[in-house]
Amino acid sequence: MNIDLKGKRAIVCGASQGIGKACAMELASLGASITLIARHEEKLKEVQAQLPKDSGQQHHYVCADFNQPEYLKAVITEYLSNTQQADILVNNTGGPPAGQAYEAEVSAFVKGFQMHLVCNQILVQAVLPYMQSAGSGRIINIISTSVKEPIPGLGVSNTIRGAVANWSKTLSKELGKFGITVNNILPGSTNTQRIWDLVKNRAQKQGKSEEEVAAMMKSEIPAGRFAEPEELGAAVAFLASPAAAYISGVNLPVDGGRMSGG
Ligand SMILES: NC(=O)c1ccc[n+]([C@@H]2O[C@H](COP(=O)([O-])OP(=O)(O)OC[C@H]3O[C@@H](n4cnc5c(N)ncnc54)[C@H](OP(=O)(O)O)[C@@H]3O)[C@@H](O)[C@H]2O)c1
Image (cartoon, rainbow, N blue to C red; front, side):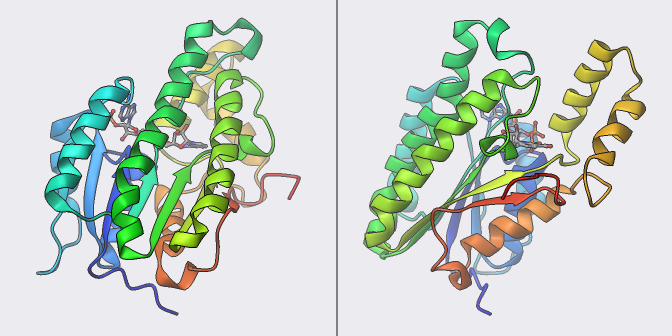
């Protein structure tokens, strides 16, 4: 199976920690040069220094806040005009805050839509010319299992994730003719800052300890544990590889078997 990514450049968003960082590490271990994107420069520098690297690889980072789409557009456009290469794009950023949909401020939906859908669109339009001229490309969106089964207490997230999934499916139909695949990874509960923030939030609301809440969540997962971020990174790396050239338009849950539906 050909999973060699030597000579490829992967732009990985939300890459300073968690799932994004794990994706960057895995893609680099297969030979890709990585461009990390997130807000915090010090964290990005640390990840950049940790990325596997041989003589052919050059790892960069770009600081951008997905709450400022116009700034993101400007910096990524300028960055790409210098590097002139983008073979893999991993769309990923922080998840919207917890809460019921009916209680959420309208501004929370606008913010979530901007951070997830608008920024993804900006990034796709920025990388597209380079993927088209290469005759191939991989766009991989980190979304959530809520695309298929809305998660109680994540009202804004559930809503925005559905929009991103439909946007992605549409793109997969439009971009196949350029040799570009578009796929979604749907993480289940994964051992990162995000899941522990959600555990804390639930524990406070339910008057339970964080240990009790985490144990209850794990009891709903056939695998009996949270995923490690590296397990998400491995799925992304496979979809980014030459071996996955004929896989497009899919939602791939990486959830230890938690979802009931297909
Ligand atoms: N972990 C889970 O169990 C789980 C399950 C389902 C779905 N997901 C989703 O998967 C995605 C990644 O999750 P994770 O667990 O890896 O989250 P995480 O540990 O909170 O990491 C989020 C990453 O996004 C970056 N980020 C956050 N806000 C940003 C902004 N405004 N602009 C640019 N970058 C920003 C962060 O870096 P900076 O702070 O440096 O900007 C960080 O690198 C999220 O959308 C999450 O909701 C996670």
